[in-house]
Length: 351
Ligand SMILES: [Ca+2]
Ligand SMILES: [Ca+2]
Image 1 (cartoon, rainbow, N blue to C red):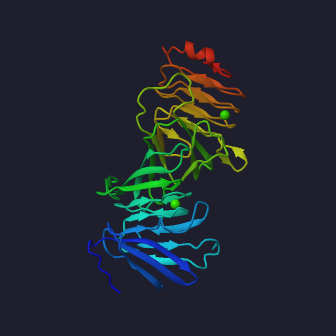
Image 2: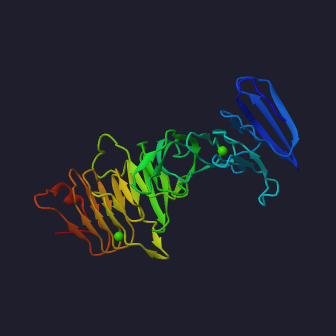
Image 3: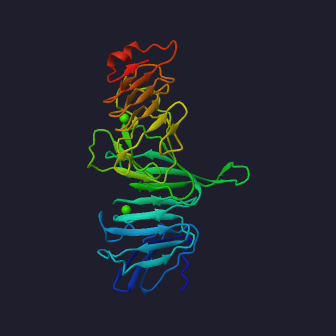
């Protein structure tokens, strides 16, 4: 069957399964009139500019929603309670780039030019095969429901130069990010106070974005498959040794049962588990023998147990240092004055 809507843009607003029967409702954008299709086994949306709107699905947070694969032109709808995936409906979506998810737990894979609104629920956005810069634009009060602007780029295999694709992708309502293949960088432009926990293993670190003031059990956003982390210009440097603004917490990084010896140089941007890190205001490390070098904007370094080495590097201004237990070493610099911070430092031997 071919259906021509006047505007050439079709919105598939609902598709649900009742046993083996698919019921879909299509609406021309801007019109209340629509077309209901019942009993189809499949449906193909070919028209460029079509919107796949599944916000009318009868699911809620905690229930499986939809899986949208923009690159493959496919969406899968999962029936409520179908953990064994016996009633999955697959729809070809052609070149649909505009996807509105369900109120349930959706996941979507992006492509350049896509506009993906995952709606309510606990939703995951997955990167494409390209390299991606993910700009975190905003979050809700709980630190979730991320809005992201994603720039995709391709690497020239001969010159090694990256060429950005013309069209960006826009994502709303994401609660987890998987970078996918290629190099992925998270750029945090939202300056809300938050902690970025680096956990799991050095080879495949999990980044957990959590608002300060929330405890471990509370909602957080997980980020996997990322190689780089950058905090966009935060404006005014915060007050001395404040835990405010965005800081890194490596206490959860392990090698099996053992603590990892973490090495972070904030002057060069090198950090265990990541290719690069920049713009963070402080670092906390765990029980290993850690090496941390402060940059100009660094405001606190806590290294907990283990024999840690803290270098003042390019530090200036007020800096809180806490080496914790163990035999710790503080390396200064010729001509550097650190009297104010020295009064607040503990567990450190100055060189
Ligand atoms: Ca959702
Ligand atoms: Ca340590």
